[in-house]
Image (cartoon, rainbow, N blue to C red; front, side, top):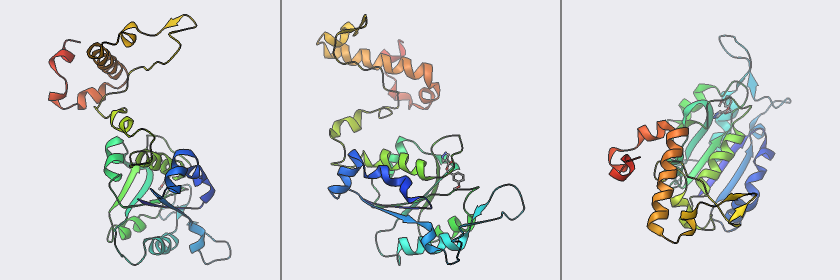
Length: 243
Ligand SMILES: COc1cccc(COC(=O)c2cn[nH]c2)c1
């Protein structure tokens, strides 16, 4: 997979070079390009923003600069087709399904906006040449899209073959069955007077699987009842309903 990020703060993306992702990049599982939006300005102040039409607070990112940056990064439309992702509070919610869908993409480009946002015509114009998704990582406002891009890139990259140590855990992680992960334990058996639940040391794997499912259901019911409501009918087997 190729990932490009366009931003006015390229150093914000340095964490991509660390640890897990750093290894994946070294092994050429992922090619990451980070581009400074200001490289496509032509004025002495290297301006990327201007006042909003219609008035109101803050500034809007200029279309010309973004247009030239995207033209340069996307190239002349040669294969493969990139998918443009714009992190924004006004976007569709990003979730594990989105991460899984994007992990099959050959090329993702993240446009990191700041200020009040990017002139809408940049998105509308790009959408005439490639798929564009305006995506939110949560209902709060950040200063810029860079941190959101890091979140989404990590969620996608960990699904790629050879990026994670243990490929199995990507399948079994939270949300893979639509529920929250239950509690987990490791040694010692008793720590500060807190013992590990006996079932987990019983060696009875049917009982362990049942206990884990019960814990996941209970936690999901308490913390995210919306996820329960979203489960396909058949997913809750009759043993679950006995809860
Ligand atoms: C593109 O326009 C804007 C405008 C304002 C902030 C941002 C950065 O993204 C977020 O704040 C965000 C993303 N998901 N949840 C919050 C982008």
